[in-house]
Image 1 (cartoon, rainbow, N blue to C red):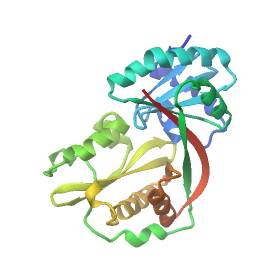
Image 2: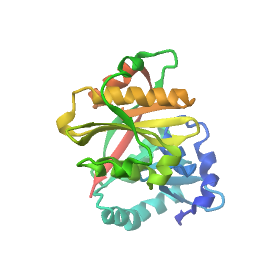
Image 3: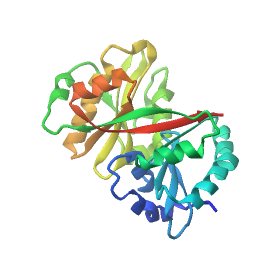
Length: 270
């Protein structure tokens, strides 16, 4: 039987991440910094869990990948409950990764009757000895989000508000835990760089730029300010992108990040 556990019990699945260096998205949900849900085989002594990250709009398997009873039950739960919930959220795909490579085979086996696909995700860690990011600190009109953001008179304030609420649930939670930089052109917010997830002393980096304003260097500039802010507060920036996102990979390396690891991200549509 599958149980959705209450936030007060999230700490009980913390041990399932022992030895897992990556996946700050999962750590952030368990630490209750970012919104999500957790489903387990046992409320009091979980062996395996499925974690939903609202910001990523995706799922993660953690814990014992040989827990056949859980896998049998979670498959039915996904088909009968989770997919229905995703449809209500107007999400027409199911995305999932495993906390280690052993999960890859189990995921492929679990969803073998579906047209499941996968891509490679790359993780980058900050090179503490570099200062490459500083080259862009004095360029353009760069602003930091504060509580006055709701009074900003621009055409597309929702661009930044919706993104922050997706990852943080509420603006008040973001103000308490996150940071975000943005720039304005033509009376519009054209690019933002924000902390998507917070765990311990780490912030993940999220960047969004309006399509018509891309390739102008905004992402590089905003990320430079984001990194500077992190380092001033003893926070390590963390980068994760798909292997086929060449622009993101090049930007990470240009800023001073170094590739650390990779993992598979699976998905199927419905």
